[in-house]
Length: 287
Image (cartoon, rainbow, N blue to C red; front, side):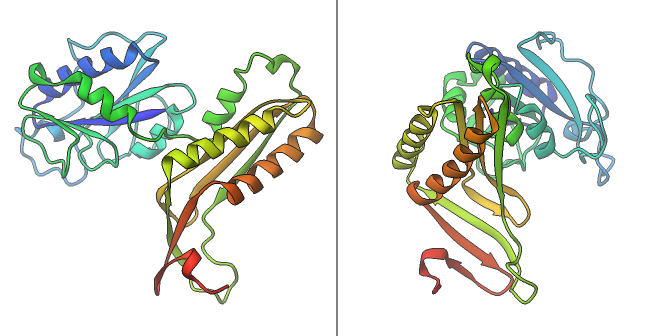
């Protein structure tokens, strides 16, 4: 799933921009929208600040929900969202939507770590696409900005995709591996705050494709899905997934183990570790 944010000072302009972007993305796949709503805890009482206004009325220019599109309303402070549950952050909602949708458009999140479309006055630090109003928005440029980003994958989204394989009716096993950022190797180690990953995109994608193709060629293996995050990943967060759909558990377990081993050995990823005391690239650190 790929996501973007649409920001701007005027709610009507934002909603018009969202409608235009959703329409373009819906031609490529399923789309959900996440809307910032309700006054946050630090609301300053400025009724003209409609980014901090009360729960909005349904926009008149947005298409109704269909099987391909869905709208989710999320509180500005993350305390609730309309679909289910409480204390939901934008990242958590995006992860929930990742298995089901190809795209998510988040309205009214200027601080989100997403490609950003800014319409009119805005608070976004470095938007990817800007326009004075929704009518002037270059929707093709927005689509290009979205497609240029890495997909947002979760373990659930990879499993869901594997289960759509044409031979899934013959599969009796789904084996998964999840790698996470370890805070410490032992009780006396300096705590790690986060890891930062960089990769050579073209080479990494080619190596991943080769590994996947060779693993899928094994007898009894129907599908293999792998994803490794890049950028900053905090301690305790998931960083890599391997999913194998197979006929039986033996080939599933063997293939998921070989998959993570080959990913770590063959895919060019560079890891910077930041602890509470220092920062260093792993290949520069004495073993």
